[in-house]
Length: 190
Image (cartoon, rainbow, N blue to C red; front, side):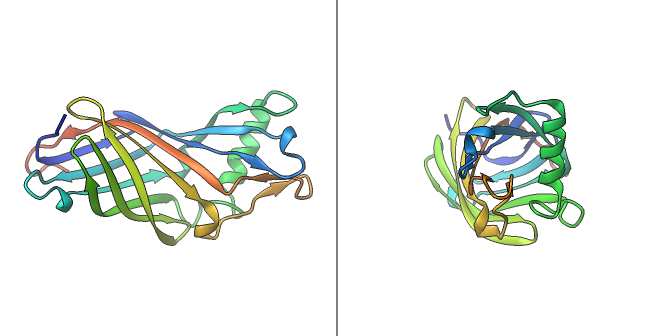
């Protein structure tokens, strides 16, 4: 179903955004595959139905809003203390440097595909480094969209993050998924 032309806002008030991590190394059986959700993120989409390739999307995720919601695998269940330690590491200097880089940002450069299934080609900025990435998207109904991408952390100079003297490592590829409603804005509204 094609969306009407215009400007839309989206984000945590109308959807969800999650990260999915894996583990590698000799100690990978001890660790957990994590699902991390962002509770504060927002974006804006400008849809041009006459020139769809001219449409644009920009979004930002507040890094301090990332929370561990699930940990699967591992030798023991993930505890509240484990979750807190993971969030500290995630926000710290070895990974996302939250004090210096509070947001992760995406800005599209062009869009390809059909009105129902399309790719957002653009620039993703993490820890002060910007690299190209493609986000695959599908419309679900008139104004709901879901999308996904794979982020190889090493492309942004992140990692490899490890514990237990390097025996347990965060996998380089992190899956990103989102689903959100596109909310039309009125003329002159942000």
